[in-house]
Length: 196
Image (cartoon, rainbow, N blue to C red; front, side):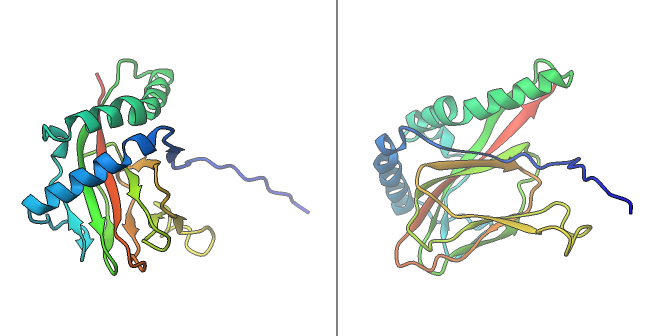
């Protein structure tokens, strides 16, 4: 009888880590989101019932120091790994940069519809305030149509305060409803590349 092997040819690289010094910045980020919400109306993008800031808070003088910490200490280690891969694959000098960043505030019942992040390379989330049952990140397989019933078509990540997740920007994803009585706060971001 013939015996088949299996090759995993086209994996989807998703990077995740717990931020070691997150507790030192948590309250500052929460205070910033509350102050921001008191001054500006929500932006309507994928948010259903929740609040979303504009995507340019990295340019807000009140957020610059937090953003610098996020880029230098949280995102750069993953970007350095990606840059090394580009170099190994004959694309030396590839530049990776922060494209934009925003925050999401989801109260009870709020969720985010399925979407992608066009014109970007990688996207991601940092969970700032994540009570139990406050809404999972659900990633949709890019092979869901072709492999329906053969492989899982979604991957669910339960939020954890201080965890960062980076995934390819073309990966469809949504956030399930917050069924807790407490607000869920996250920072979302996009990363861009410039290949020489």
